[in-house]
Amino acid sequence: MVKPNLVLMESTGGYELNLLSELLANSIPAAAINPRNIRNFAKALGRLSKTDKIDAAIIAEFAATLKPIPQTEFDQLVLKMRSLAARRRQLVAMRTQEKNRIITSVGIYHLTELYPFPWPNRVPIKS
Image (tube, rainbow, N blue to C red; front, side):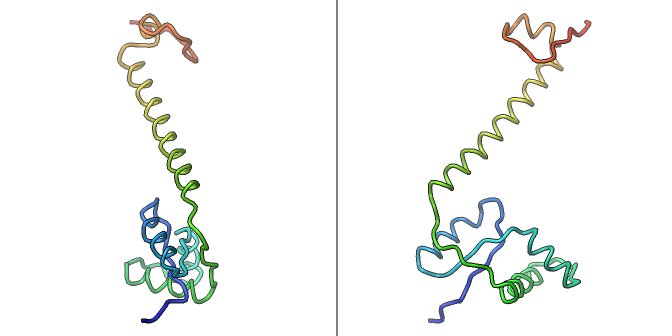
């Protein structure tokens, strides 16, 4: 069996994590690279087309040219913290959306009667 020198992949919002952890667990050198870096590399080479086959060739050329350092370990705690932080950002955004929806539907003046906690920038809306 041939052992690769490096398995390089684009980091794609967490979808690469299972593959990356499995490779590292089996002592196969691997790294996940920011897709923007690979895209900038392709642009520098004058390759603007984008298909899966072209992307694979660009990633291989990126690895051969720049020789990225393989990740050595996969810190599960860091992954959990990143995941929790991402979920918190989603929940904060959802809360803001819901506040905006309820303000639009009943108006801030009526809303303060329903929920008597301090609302930022309270401006009564005329009915």
